[in-house]
Image (tube, rainbow, N blue to C red):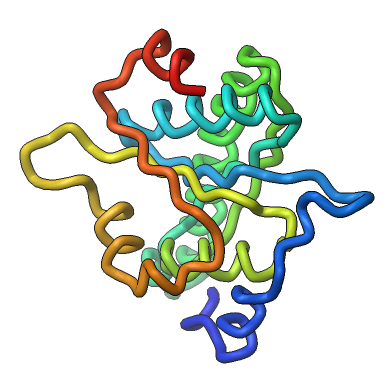
Length: 175
């Protein structure tokens, strides 16, 4: 389990990106969950990545504190949650390949927004965070709200927020 981002992580988030230097390749980060809109974020990222020669990094998080720590039950529950996350990632990797782009799956345990920040800090090739906004009446979704609620002006990379109602054809026209 990961604690809140340390000052070292926050400082390294603002380090220059190296994604277009020799030996590096830009990556578009997509957070994978069970929401309907996650596919829209993946489709946008994959189509854009295929056009500019980038790759896609798919992040699935396992929330901390979900697991009981009684007679090993917590460890079994954590392993099950990780297996579910890996299965979800495998579906998204296959979808990315169908769109003709390479995708790198990553599973992390912790608070989702903190894990996004930590991964961006650790991987200097991540050039864009792609999120999809919910089309529901109760707002853009918790992840978009959490990221937008942070000091978005200080975020180290651009953030693309894809409306969930866009079709594949509409996204194709935009990417």
